[in-house]
Length: 125
Image 1 (cartoon, rainbow, N blue to C red):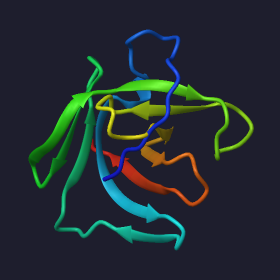
Image 2: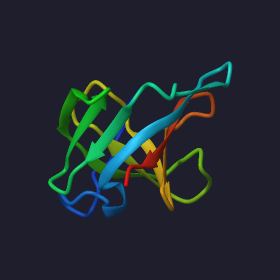
Image 3: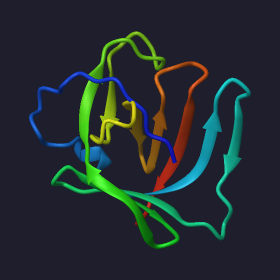
């Protein structure tokens, strides 16, 4: 999984974007200069969990591999188009912000670069 960053503080205080809250199973990831994308094998379970208290956990095959605080930010210049986009930052200083979009039960995370990496998650119900 990837997480990357540059940030602006959001005006909503410490409350995370409600659309992120929940469990998300990784289905596809990739990108970069080569533009290659990979499907997560059916026997692998990679889940990203966002909680209302602005914490997250990353799970691989039902084991927590990382956790911490996250925050959402507004990015004014986005690869998604001329309008500002929302990003998530995992708060540990090691990663860039990832732009995110939630559409129905699909979460897309992407670096804010045309040749950047991205990932698609499906909501776990």
